Length: 492
Image (tube, rainbow, N blue to C red; front, side, top):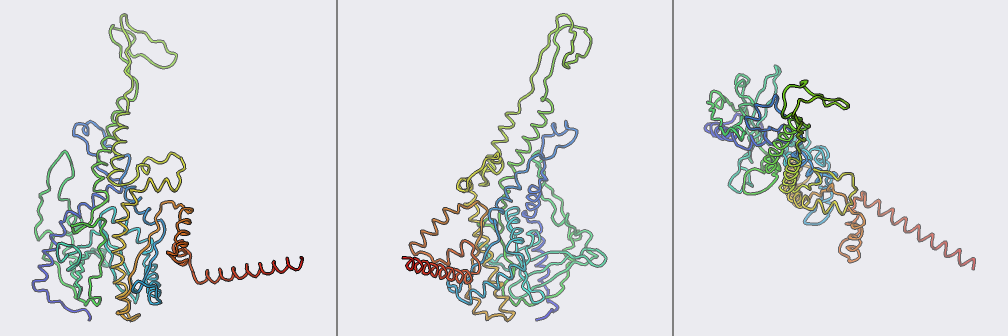
């Protein structure tokens, strides 16, 4: 079905009213805050008196938000993922063909590693990520979208099935002006709206993603600025076209960092920002204290007159007035500040399940793979949920890919609907090879698994070629043994 002129009586107003509310959703402000903390752009909040006393505002010395996000990504993606496809739970020729098709599509869209890193990092940093499937020039394409531009509308408070999903973006016209567009996806169609160049000047990101609340613990004020319809131009959006959605489902997958009874995920940094603020405050106080108290100070008590300022350089002889004495004030200790910051780092480790050694370092001491697995046990428990969430989302995406492949005429849809997929992650923690070898050997001895299963787990590729080579080597060794036995018999 080609592009048509839509009938938008009532529909346009409904869409604009809904998107108007969504553009003021608190999650958009949270995305900005978490991105700033991740990048190290922290607000070092000081009491007004201390802030006024400083000649210039101090910056941030340590950023613990970035490793909280990055370590989870690095742990989950120690290597590119692998895909496993089955048909009714069996490794049939159809399943093998589907796995090869899926792997090729993942490779073309850099989903085995590169774009998957982008998606999982967005999940950790912002709590959400989205993937959009589309067909371009006869190829299945998958785009990883920023959550700021995606507005899902769910059918009920289970937040599983989408009623519609809107993607907002802008393009530059030949004159370099921004032209905003909105794609609204339904199971049966996609409607597109646009905002003409003449309506762009007040519809800017600063208004679109404006701050609702000023994050200042010493100024609990609320931004009550209101914007009229004339300012935001909600009545200026115009329908562009409607096209049929042949997939029959909304081609967008929502990846949540944490799945609960909320429509959106939860950032890993939600529990870290307040601790980072306290850490920044402690660092700032320590710097101020060090600046004022880092050196010995001498006071002359009693007596009058004298030669004025006394030099304390080595080898100098000073003159004191009669009856005067010198008192020395020792430098202030930063031990209390250091202890407080250490406690804050330990709290960050507790609430994020990131080993504290990641923040402190191992001081050059080599640590065995087994010891590291013990240290990273909490992180492994945390990432299992992330792994399951990603696996479920990719399984949903894979079903969309198979449906698109069937619509392209590459395979019957009833055949591809029989395929199930699973994603295997290779975590970044060091592996105890000896322990794994003993474990696989035990499973083989007890006839629990096959030799091919073990070969797949240890990363052996081209199984048939390897098995043929093993058979050839076995025959060669047998022939050599026979030859040696015959030679020994002749000598005797």
